[in-house]
Image 1 (tube, helix red, strand yellow):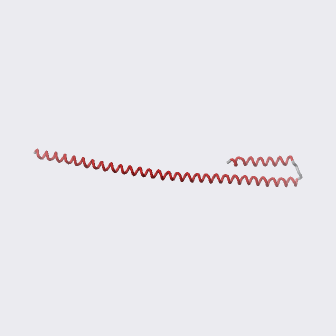
Image 2: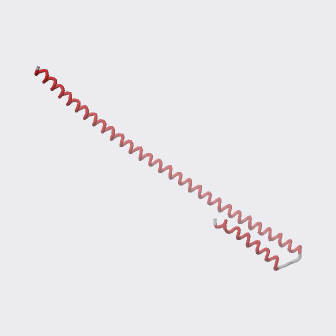
Image 3: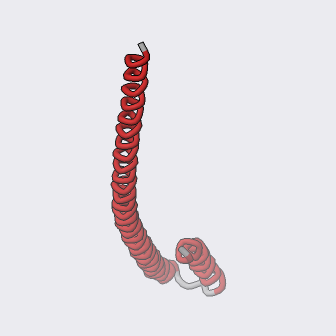
Length: 131
């Protein structure tokens, strides 16, 4: 990006040099026109070369930015897959634990129901025998 900042300076310096050169070294009209033509071609070529350098520099930076973005996307996808796997594993563990707890609660309820059933039977038999 430093090249972008230096292009106006390069062009301004070249133009100033050309003007000063013409003012301090006057020649015949045809020589001056030839000189101006040659120098303007040189300046145009220099400007073209500077623009090509600028384009190449920008192209390289864009290419690097694309590669960086692509790498970030790849890393993000990998982290997402890892997090998804970990979450799935935790969910499976929680599901197993919940299933075990439900089975234990069911067994406790069945045991308590058997206990209550036995107690009700005992109370009913006592009432029968006391009549």
